[in-house]
Image 1 (spheres, rainbow, N blue to C red):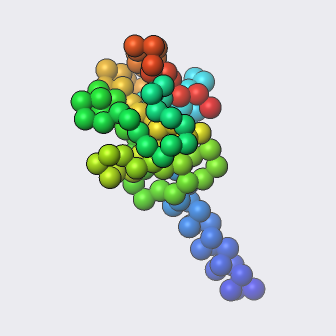
Image 2: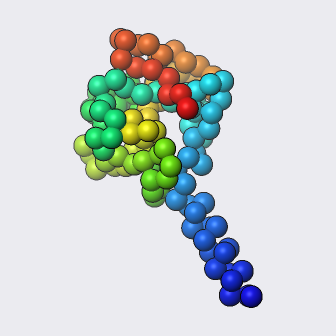
Length: 121
């Protein structure tokens, strides 16, 4: 019985460490990162491609939501950026912040250039 309890505890702890959605929440109908800042998707990213096309200056304006040490789970996956860093994706679409959002709840990037949209669950 003691072995079973230890195995269950190990499984629970392992699951917590590999759940990317733990850092993403829904707030006011949109996905937000751990700091409460709004997350966005980019129309030019192809869902399920495993890549982000927003690199270089684009990623300066639209910082990716990093997925350090996280594995895919449910609707969440991890894509590899051009620089080799992992980025969290929702339903195959990489997630980004917008540099001009200054506080939690800001959604100033929604509709930007008709290709950036708030990420919705």
